[in-house]
Image (cartoon, rainbow, N blue to C red; front, side, top):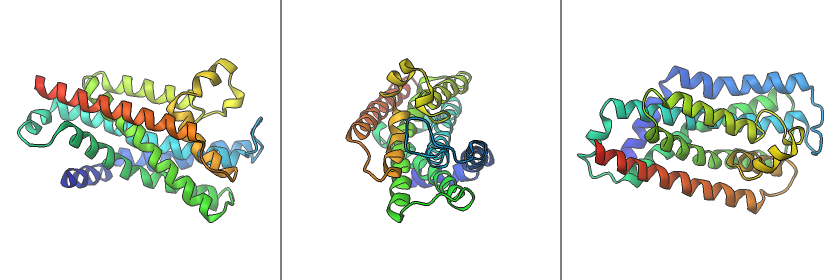
Amino acid sequence: MTTLIKLEILRTLRNKKFMFFSVIYPPALYLIVAGAADGKPIPGTHLSTGLYYMVSMAAFGAMTAVLLGNSERIAKERQAGWVRQLRLTALPGRGYVAAKIAAAATVSLPSILVVLGAAALVKGVRLEPWQWGAIAAGTWLGSFVFAALGVAIGYLATGDAVRPISMLVYFGLAFLGGLWMPMTLLPQWVQNIAEWLPTHAYTALGTAVEGGGAPHAKDMAILLGYLLLFAGGAAWLYRKDTRKA
């Protein structure tokens, strides 16, 4: 499994499209959005736009890397007959899913660090050292949830359908979770739905730390629940697909 993780990481890092959309695009988008708002406070919160969008764009970049990258790559592997090759190995479904999640989450780290670096160096965001570390760690660990979702989508959808399905899930979760727009600016019914979505809990990890506190237990429980759901579903879909191969 360790060898598979290393191969996945190396293959992903060689992908120029990945490097742009998951490493360069999120910090560029952060500078555009935060710059347009010019450091104004977010209504209904204690955070400035620079702080709020730093966390949301770091999460957005991590999601780009792990959700879109995983789903499309796995769908292509299935088309190429990779599942049939895996049937010849002793690798169980949970091992394959764990390897895919670990590899995807590892390559999401550069995106997170670049966004945080842009916030500190360009936008002048200032936090305590422990806050920087906690935000980076929380955003990275939270990306495992969406890596598992990417694996599940990759085995659920066909090669032709995987892109529209993954994009619909990706943009839907990003919007409803408050990654593009603060939740306080959205209708109340959207806020009520978003409260139970993984993206909302994901960004809440960082915003809680920015406020000087610890992440809320409810948000961590929601993320853990989704991780178990997505990882379990991905393992089941992998075994089902293997039996049909």
